Image 1 (spheres, helix red, strand yellow):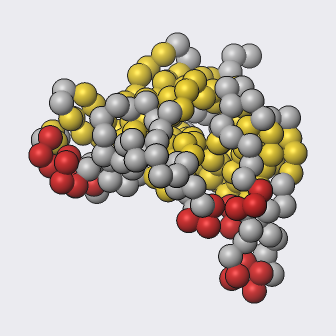
Image 2 (cartoon, rainbow, N blue to C red; image 1 turned 90 degrees about the vertical axis):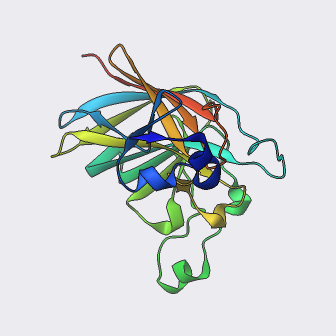
Image 3 (tube, rainbow, N blue to C red; image 1 turned 135 degrees about the vertical axis):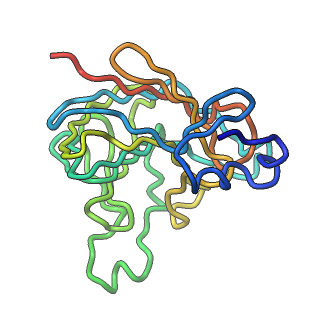
Length: 212
């Protein structure tokens, strides 16, 4: 399926996103999300190579860029388990990680409780145990993740946060899409966030299978 520039300017990638996970725009194959193939118990290495977004030059606020990973059973990072993992190349925004009122009312753990692991700080998104956010001490360090799966893949996409954590994690809307490049032992992802530009440099990361 091919998307015209006029359609992109009007609706971003949303028209085709609902129909299929990939399409063609200006001769380039664009992915809404990508399925990284793995076998059960396999280790992969996630490395952020660059991140550069000022939301189309508006520069009104910080739009943090991150990596989104989801699996059917669970992901494991340094003994912590989840189904949805987001990885962020920033220090944790502690002041923003205060839980909404409904979290306290339900008696769930507060989201601002940070746990330290080798790569940085981890918290549960909105107190939900199956959703972990990892804030990296070194934005370009490689993070090893173990995938437990029946269907044999990790769903991969880029995520962002519009400068206030109570607005949550966003992804796969409007101008968001990825150019996926196959590399040795994995893939490299060139990503656009929700702003409808065409540079695909808001965050660039790679995922590789660990050897041995």
